[in-house]
Image 1 (cartoon, rainbow, N blue to C red):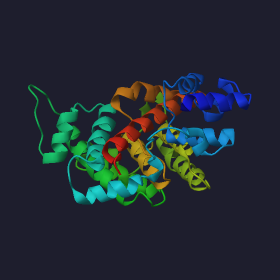
Image 2: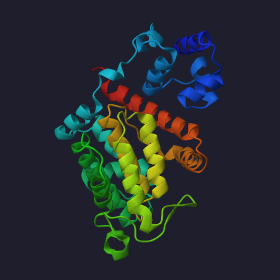
Image 3: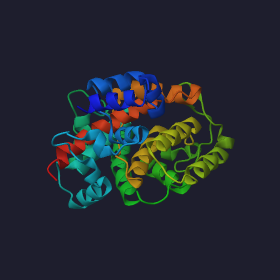
Image 4: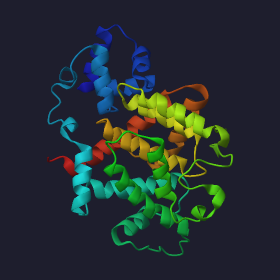
Length: 313
């Protein structure tokens, strides 16, 4: 069992679970779950474990019968190909629906997943009993479908401030906010805002802080999930737009994962409490484990989606 081998290699290195957790930047409880088989390490974690133990990935996962080799799946190529096919019931189709529903629901949208699916598949809205629907929720959900397509078309390009602003413009186009001059759709905020009760960068300093963030990120010689998580935490701390920062931040995560051949992921609405707690701990105290665990868990969930739709490839 993989968990037995993780424990064996850890003990051979004379490492405690706590020491391994620190190197892997996860909680000690996560290491314990790996070793007992209660939790399967993500692909990224398996790679890092192999590096820590100074062994190959094959040595670590040997004897895992019929193990799905996700490394052979080029997720960006698959999503682009399926996007052009315009068929229902594939990875791209369900990524669109799951992404739009969950990222919007985290921010307060009252559309159901079924309504989101109906909008995507029929370009109409399905009213369920006495449901009250906000027109902006419908517009922003429809805009998110366009945003994902734009992101896929530009996934291999370097991330820039111009691209980030375009993400925001696409998301907020034709909404009530877009008709407010002070809202500044597609540009940085003019008024103070906050994120989860925490102070964010003042409008007059946003340009400076975004330039610093982009300078740091684009100077990296290699981008792993660790750097993408770091970027996200810093981006959400700046909160450069009047609204829509969370959704723009999460589309950036997906894009950068695809660009750097990392399995992308979607933060589910059911996990938003862990997501917000992780951000707060990361930003206020530098404690990275909780947010990292939340993201790796989301990555595992997307891997299961890939297995379901592409497992026979």
